[in-house]
Amino acid sequence: MTEPGKPPIGLVGIGNMGFALLQRLRSEGWPVVVHDIDPQRCKAAKALGATVARHAAEVAQHCRQTLVVVVDAAQTAEVLWGDHGLHTQARPGDVVWLCPTLGPQDVEDAAARLAALGVTVMDAPMSGGPLRAQQGEMSLMLAGPPFVLQAHEALLSTLARQRFVISDKAGDAARTKLLNNLLAAINLAGAAEVLALAQQWGLNARQTLSVIEASSGQSWIGSDRLRRALDNDFAPRAHTTLLAKDSRLALEACALAGSPTPGLGQMAAQRFAQACEQGLGALDDASLFLQAGGQPEPAAAQDEAAALRACTELAAHLGLGGVQAQVLGRFSNLAVGLPPHGMVARVATGTARWRAAEQAQHEMAVAQALAHAGAPAVRPAVSAIAGAHRHLAGPHAWVSQGRTWHISLWQRAEVLTAQPEPIAAGQALAACHAALAQASLPLRADWGMFEEVHRLLDDPYLLHQGAAPDDVALVRHLTQACQQRLHALCPALQALHGDAHLNNVWATPQGPLWGDWEDTIHGPVEWDAACLVAGARVLGTEVAWSEAALQGWWQAREAQGVAPSAALLDECVLGRTLFVTAWLWALGAAQANPERQARLAGRLAWLRAQA
Image (cartoon, rainbow, N blue to C red):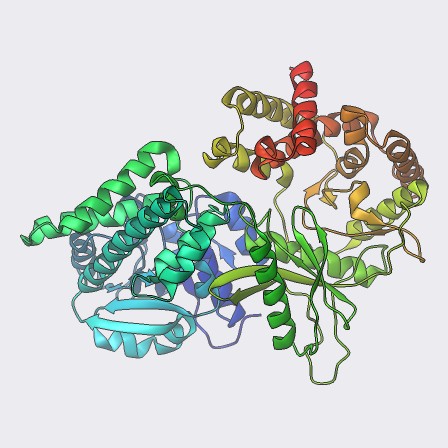
C-alpha cells in the first residue's frame, strides 16, 4: 500500500538487487516507477504495485529522484544517455543515485555531464546482497553534496541500515567500493583454493571450514560462499562475472591513479577471469571453488542435524516452545515434524540451489487461497497460542550458524498408511483447480515450467552433475518444439499444482489431500493431469493408480462444465517428461543411486524415441 505524502521513486534496473530494493520500497509504502528490459521482471513489479515505464526517460517524467541499479558502465551509459535516457526528461533539481559498482572516472564523468543540466549525481554503490536489501539491512557508500543526503534521509533510512558518507566528491564512493570488492575477490580466491587443498589432503572440508571460521583465517565472503559451494548451491546471488568485472575495474583505477598494481589483486582478478572463461560466469561466485579444483560434497548427517537445529530455532523465534524437531521424510527437500504443535516444516535442500525466493512466496499465496476456499489441500500453519504470531507459514529465510535455511511451515495432517483412493484423488485435484480458477493471486509468468527447464539447461553447472551434452541438446530441442505446439493449441491458463503425482497426495480420514505446492505454475490444467500419468506412460510405474486418478479428474472436470483436451494432455505428458528430466539432472540423478539413475535413463530413452 502506498502511503500519502511520499514522493515517487524511480528505479531503473530490477534484477536481483533492483527487485529487492523494489520490494523494500513498496513494503514501506513508497510509490515506485520502474523500467527494465525484461518484461517478466516488469510484470512481477506491477504485481507489487509499481508503475511500469516504457523507458528510462518516462521514469524521469514521473520522478524527481531515480535509483540506477544496472550491472555495469555500458548499461549505466544507456540509461543516462541513450535515445530514451534519463537526460532527455531530467529537470534541474533532480537527483540520480548511481548504485552499480563503476569505475571512478565513469562516475565523475556522469556527474559532470548531468550537473550541466542541473541534475545532481549521488555516487551510491551498494553492499549486502538481495536478502539484506529486501530487509533494509544493506550498506550504502555515499559521495556527493551533503544537502542531498539531508533532504533524502527518509529514503536512505528505508533502504540502508548502514550508510557510510565517504566525501562530497562523486567518484570517492566508487573508489571505496572497488577497494572493498578487490579485497573480497582476494579473500574468496584464497578461501576457495585452501578448501580445495583440504579435500586434496583427504581432510573433511566442512570441518576444515568450521576451524577456519573460528580462527584467524576467517572471512565473511569465504564462509558465505564456500558453505554454499559444499552444498552444491551455485544459484546466482552474485554472478561470478560481477567480481570479475569489479577486480578488473580496481586494477584499471590503479593504473589511472598511477598507483602500483597490487600483486594479490592481480592474481585474484586472473582467477575470476579464468572462471568466466571456463563457463562459470553465469553461476554464483561460490563457483570459484570449482575453478580451484574443489568438489561439492553430498548432504551428510551433520547437515540434517543442522536443518533440525534451524527448525527448532525458528520455532522458538515464532513463540512455539518445547519443539522436538524430527525428520518425517527425505525427498527433494526435507520434511520436519515440530511436535507438540501439529506442524510440519519443509526445508528447501535439493531445490534451493535453483529457485528464487519469489517461488516460495507464490506457493504460499496459492496455499492460502486454497485454504480460504476450503479446497482439499494441505494448509499453511497458523498458531492459536496467545501472544504468538498467528500466521506462521512464511516462507522464512532463517540464519542458523552462518547458513541460511529456507523454511515454510504447514499444518500437520493425519496421514494414513494406505495409498489414497485414486478416483477420489483425481476428483480432489479437480476441486483444487476449480478453487484456483476463482482465486485472486499475484501475477505469474505463463508457462513457467518451460522457463524453469530453459534456466536449468542454460546453467553450465548442469554438466558437472553428469548431464551428457548430446542429451542436453536433445531435451532443449524437444522442449522448444513442445512449447510451440502447446502455444498453437491456445489452451486456457490458470494457477496449477505443477507436480501433481502420487507422492504429493495423501490419504487422510477426511479424504485425499494434495500437498507440496512448491512447483505451482501458470498453465493449462492438463499439465497437472499429465503429472498424474506421465510416469506410468513413460516408465510403466503405478499404471493402474495413475489411470484411475486421471479418470476421476477427467470426470470431475466434465461435471464442472469444462471438457479436458486429449491433445493437450498428450503434449503435456511430453512436456512433463522433459521437465522431470532436467530436474533429475539438476538434483544429481546421473551420479545418484541406481534407482534414480534408472528413472533418468528410462526417460531419456523414451525422449530419444520421440525425436
